[in-house]
Image 1 (cartoon, helix red, strand yellow):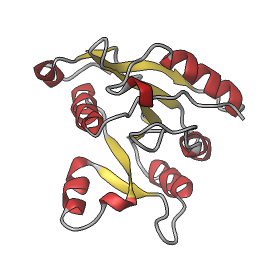
Image 2 (cartoon, helix red, strand yellow; image 1 turned 120 degrees about the vertical axis):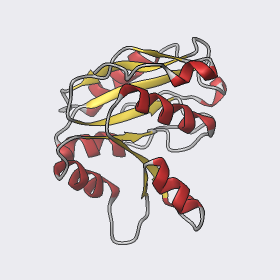
Image 3 (cartoon, helix red, strand yellow; image 1 turned 180 degrees about the vertical axis):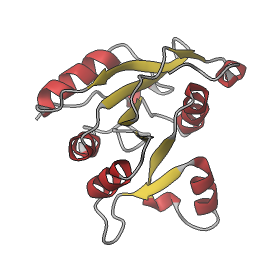
Image 4 (cartoon, one colour; image 1 turned 180 degrees about the horizontal axis):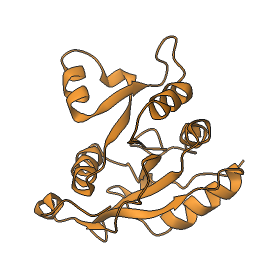
Length: 183
């Protein structure tokens, strides 16, 4: 998928690297996510790529009036939403959409975590969609696509591929970005 024209990210000193795959549906992981501003740059970048997407955001951000901003931003609440399991919720959303890419930060937080939340993997498996690996590299001043993973049979192999793609990528706060651990 081509970008939609003039790159808004260049106004912030970033450029788009690559084209979004010709997939109708996917789970998109976006990392590193080490600062709040990453979400803003991500939104600009995904708009530039011209894809239909939703961001998954923690439910704690959905309080009035912030909930209005989050919905306008293209976010849906996950994690601990009463009566809803995020994996099934996202799988249902994807299965009922003609075209949609669900964006998630697998780290789950902007500060350093010991390991990633595995939900993104199980969402992709349950929805039967690939994982698109995207990144935001402050050192190289780029946001882009690292690759796409279709083969989801083995979690450890998927994580090994993801870690290889993210090797050398620097977040806004590099010390806070830790690669995923295999089982």
